[in-house]
Length: 336
Figure 1: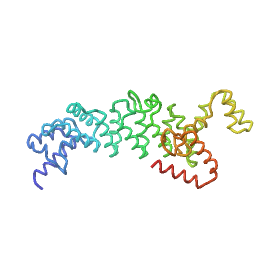
Figure 2: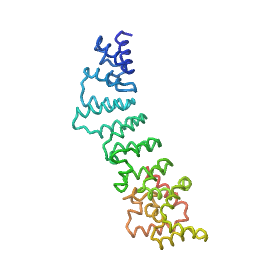
Figure 3: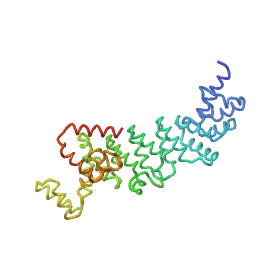
Figure 4: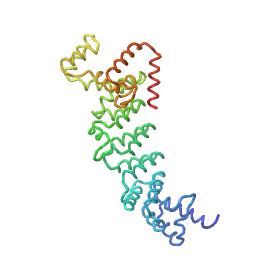
């Protein structure tokens, strides 16, 4: 092994460990070490990665490199890939914004966010989410990130991202914009994949409750026991004190629940929760209607004549098990 390679290893180790004085002394004696690669990695790249990275070392190495928007962009990607300290990534983002006035914080934070999530650096990813410029709900990078975490079923990170404080949290923004379609897709995914903690977070937001109730009310038979509490709470919150008295009398008389809701609806004007859920759900697609808008198989997109034909065909084939299997297969195909 040549002395130069040996010195390069020592220099890279000093940079990675954050020993500023050692890096300064070695550069004073052997300036060429500043650009000497080790296993394809430059000292500057090494200086931004890891938990021991220091801004002072980055400043020592900067004069030896072409400091351009492109090079800083690559450094940000490398830092996010190797789990750099959030303060280091913030520093690089500030440098990039100074070098490229056309750069946007959302775009570069979003790229770094995707990389950090891909390599499972959860803390850095959550920090980058916090740097995104509101309104949060319409940032494409954040949408992709939460969707990715939903697929990986990493509930703690999802909950932190959904509840981020700021000018407008995702939940608040969805409520103000009459429920974001993207957020509804997250809700639907969480129910179908039994992500109980995420479902509880959605249940806490009033605008999502009817949609959530529909998803749980028409969930597959094997999952309905899991969502019994969600349905029970929706029934309870949907009823006024007067309606509750009527339903209590109905139960004591041993009458079907449907009778109690009919009487309650007539006397109080309140709607049967099951009717609300039925309006939101397509029994053909086995999906929320708002998620299947425009689909040829969805009753929501049909005209009145087509709806009557489909309803009559449903009634005539209600006892046909093969037709049920066909609907199930169609559901899986639309989801994929």
